[in-house]
Amino acid sequence: MTHATDWYVPWNDALIRKYDINAPRYTSYPTALQFSPLQNIEVQNHLDQQRNKQGPLSLYIHIPFCEHLCFYCGCNKIASKDRQRPDHYIDMLEREMVLHARNFGHRPISQLHLGGGTPTFLSLSQMNRLLDMISIYFDWQPSIHQGEFSIELDPRETSKEMLVLLKKRGFNRVSFGIQDFDHRTQVAINRVQPFELVEQKFNDVRELNFDSISVDMICGLPHQSSESFLSTWQKTLALQPDRISLYNYAHLPERFKPQRRINASDLPDADEKLRIMQDSIERLQQAGYIYIGMDHFAKPDDDLSKALAQGTLQRNFQGYSTQAEIDMLALGVSGISQIDGAYLQNHHQLDTYEAMLNNMQLAVKRGLFLSRDDKIRQWAILQLACQGRLCLHELSERFQIDAQHYFANAWQKFVALEQDQLVRIDGSSIIVEPLGRLLLRPILLSLDAYYDAKMSQHFSKVM
Image (tube, rainbow, N blue to C red):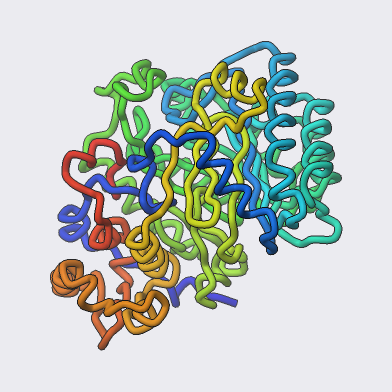
């Protein structure tokens, strides 16, 4: 078993403050800021080239509906109380599946994730229909093909009957959005869910023998303090989730309209926010959780922790993963696919998404076909983000380049990072030091050919 003490990350207040900048989370490289409009014909040609490709597939399906609008949320969602509204959306998902099935229907699904929005906004019959469609148009056979089959759950919107259905249909992982247990904070973000409710949902999930429970928490919400969040952690750790994601709230009301309902004066100041983050990281490690990297923690016996120790950790739009490098097909509004060197994003607007599918056209709006330089930098970034080291000799062989010369400018940045003990240069290898694991995002910036100061407003703070 992986031990937490083997992967302990220290807190250095001076260096944290120095490197606490706005930076991407690098669930992709290049980031979505580099996406541009794509023509349907070039997208279709690229996907048609995948028809004879073998190997497993990751499938993401976006369900945008929410009955309650959480004020902090920056996701693509549709507030509605009409429980029949998803019926037409599922019709559109089926049309999208039909269009993709000819190129991807033969590949076994080793990773499935339903995200949102609130996937459990769907009724039992709607969920059954959606899962039937996945089984019809894709090779999803949970009883035969092992994999990660997960769904995001809102404790307020998840019945015991829905959990029974999900388990019966093959789901083995669930993720609860908790954010904070403090009632005052919950009221301020319009997401009131008492601890007792969440605890009952945890008990229901464990009774049904799901393999893993994850929780999402957010640092920097209204009325949070180090004292109030300490109480939240006491309750959260009592639930013993297998994985914990601790995100940094980015207040961008000019971009996300619901955030305008949050009073900026109620947010913790920068110093208090850092104290909350420091206390959280230290408390989670004391509780035995391993810091996987960039917001993610896991128990020592979790698959993510094992993958970290074994050097097989991966990262994609769903965050860290144990799945080997595989294509990811995303369905639904705003979904981003990662297919054989291309990022393809569907339309954000539901009416445009539906109009294109009604014309039997793919709903892709924009994206990016990676250049050779993009692929080289993407591989290097993933090595540092997932394995904690980058071997320039291996990079040179893989891409037939002189990596040290190719990354001459980045090398000077790594030398500076070494002086701050964030990385260690060992011959031709760059190794992330324990403190550097907390500051991965600024380290990865050294390899980003696109980032400049003007882009920083689009990203959250590192801490």
